[in-house]
Length: 280
Image 1 (tube, rainbow, N blue to C red):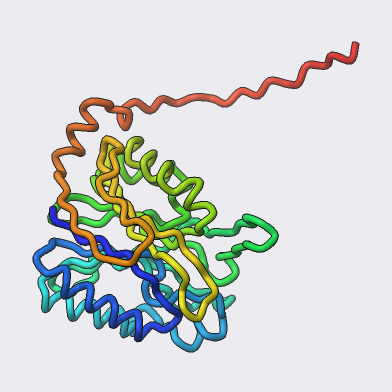
Image 2 (image 1 turned 90 degrees about the vertical axis):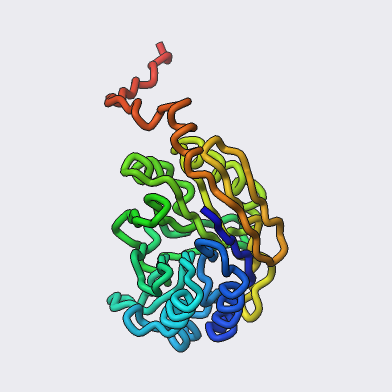
């Protein structure tokens, strides 16, 4: 399986970002699939701006343009995620991963389940749930190379999701991201390697990087591909670019035969012992 992994710095202007994506698609001809990062179409904290530039899923010109190009180039595209308008009563958007096949058909989509609501410091706070509604379903997609589990960014911190996808047959896990530089430096590599090791899957984590025009936001970069044994086979560093990697899907079965932990679940009870009263 020949893959292209894009690392980009999206702005808050979807038309500019679309030009970038179409260019990357042309450079990916000859590969099987192109992986793009989270919020590829628009990086923004400005709710008013988002309401002006984002589109509903059914009439999303960004998706339509990518799909048309995918068909022209005979290329699968994993649109890591895009921000879309929804019918949410609070006006929240969806952070949606879209998988498009080489005929230009959307074969699967997944809405990010876990919202990034954190206070990293007095200067750096995120509350994704104010702008985005959480998804309710985990998603597996059938591809010519095997089942692919779709996830997004902060999902990475919830290992039960990846275990469920792997036990349901996933051989490849996608984790497109726009990771904070602070948490990226501390946790990104460790978490991605852990998800690969725990599941015996390939992990493909394309990433946003750098300072995003018009937004004031910075992201960590270091898009990774990790093999089923936990070895990093691509680290994209902190620069924008397009990288090519070949995946040996037989490595999934080999890793799982060596450590068959996906088959070793056992039921258990949780016991909580009371704190001993030592006052007497």
